[in-house]
Length: 423
Ligand code: NAD
Image (tube, rainbow, N blue to C red; front, side, top):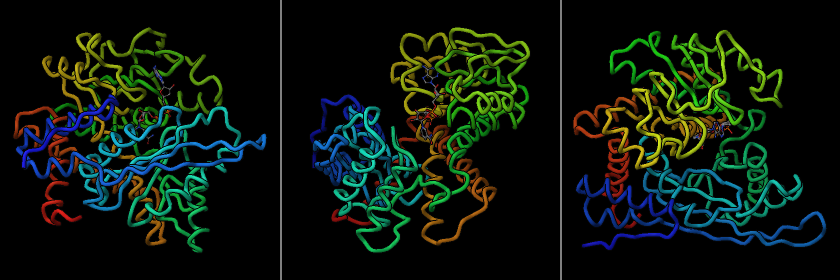
């Protein structure tokens, strides 16, 4: 069967489809499998009526897309943002399929959200909206069907509202349907640090395979939030010199190395200033971190920060993508030509979803692990996944991003083939 390739007006979905078709063709995946995996199993749109604080009713639009449940329940976040639409959800659901597959965890890919502006809503309005949305998607989510998690503008509180609503509908506690819950209510120790810890683990594994000692390495970290902070801390603990950290307030640079524990303590003492006013030995504020002279660069803030305009100025030899999509496809091509190795986002930041899997596993057994157990298991999986992608890339003489894509697609395709067409 010859398949017409799908295209989309939504840029994110169009890119996700192009990336999939490109990798699938290079792998010589059969046209039947391309047809199955190039489409989503389910694209659900729901109306979410909410009584606002002034007594008026506003009907929001919500979505949940399940791209694939071939390997297991769909997994992926729920975001609250004005730009959310069904195509964006489908693109992100597809990426979740590949991310979970590469991570080697028993999930497919899903994503959802509500088109809304949570910044202008009161906590009570957000609660009513979250509960109404949970009730609307209840028929298709479940411990063994689809397990959502936090995403942009959602967190532990929203997960509790979702879980509580569905638990009430089912007449029993349902901890396995949502992950990212607070530790006090079926959440897991270790989750906060998981993504950054995994990102740094990839950086350290890369140094191992290229034969470098972390003690000889200068590191720069863009973004000093959840991912950046734990990446910085783990790299420092491994002996690397963190010469720059940055946030929206600027880039803090010291050739002597920044004491990360001191920076974290500063943030704790001055939560509103972020890093404004922070100083250290030899510290100065500089303009740009992307072109900084360092060995390993961790972009852990935003998408598209290394692009066609600045990729030729990158001085780092290695980039580990903590954020989602920090290197554009054009930037990637330039880096590749210059021999700069990039550890792709859906390998490097998969510690977050692996951590969600650990939470789900603990909820199912009703037995919670100590934090060191969590970290030990996370590190074991991250190291194995890094090796898988590195070896695949070396054997096929391709870059790590393409290798990660191909390995991920292959695993899903193998399961579809095993299970047959009627999934
Ligand atoms: P966060 O909000 O905790 O931190 C983001 C940091 O980036 C903040 O320090 C902010 O000041 C900084 N920042 C924003 N704009 C910047 C700019 N222009 N220059 C420099 N710094 C800037 O977010 P996070 O949870 O650390 O997530 C960061 C990235 O990692 C996002 O792309 C997110 O999608 C991705 N990610 C996060 C997780 C997770 O578990 N937190 C998992 C996978 C992927």
